[in-house]
Length: 111
Image 1 (tube, rainbow, N blue to C red):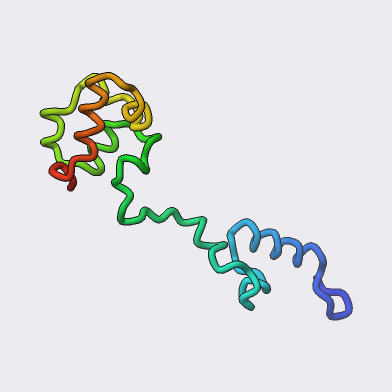
Image 2 (cartoon, helix red, strand yellow):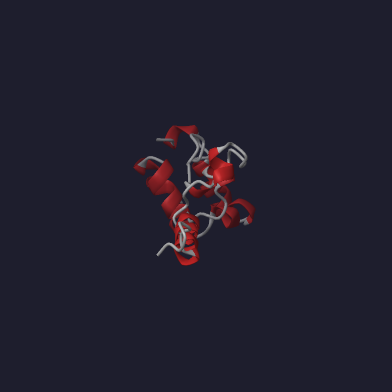
């Protein structure tokens, strides 16, 4: 409800709250005052080289193999390491870990 031609404060606050919640550009963003990468961080983008084992150390080996490697790697991959993270496999030191890490980085098995 407007009084003397002025909009009510509650309506303006509601519009501002909705704009903040739903990510509408602000006046500064529309004018170019905001950082250009501010909106880009909200959308996850997977780079082309996302299938490098050394850059996915927190990922489980089975998930990494399914996403980035051919199925034929499973014939040679040590089965006890399917549930381990790539970081563990990299620093484990066991012979089976060394074999697993070598296979994960072998270009023959890249998709």
